[in-house]
Length: 152
Image 1 (cartoon, rainbow, N blue to C red):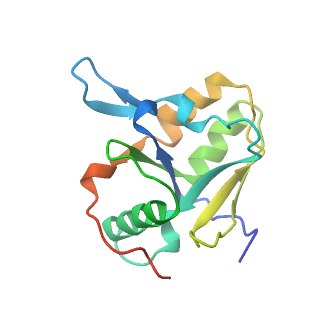
Image 2 (cartoon, rainbow, N blue to C red):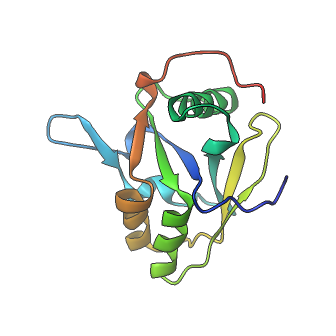
């Protein structure tokens, strides 16, 4: 249902281009930069995809989410996907006095699309907190096998 808030125990996945992945001194990906959660000029909400929208075990859900991203935008081979818990994201924002909403807003090419509404435009400390704590789980694009686009 469009506009429905996601349950706090659910998860959302954000596409992270290679340039916004955190790397160690050997070039290995070790996390996500806070910049991955910054609203671009003109954006009114942060875009993500609802993990539990898809049935199955967690690995199947992650694969379906990645297929949804691949069907709706150009996904770089060295990119990744940050996975965050809805409650942890809301709580992290609340510690910085931001009251966000995470709502289901399906799109034609991604029925599991969600919008993170009321994200602040200028709070670098929040972006780092989101990257380190709330959206800290990461799946690399190269680790997810190719498949057909989801059809829920």
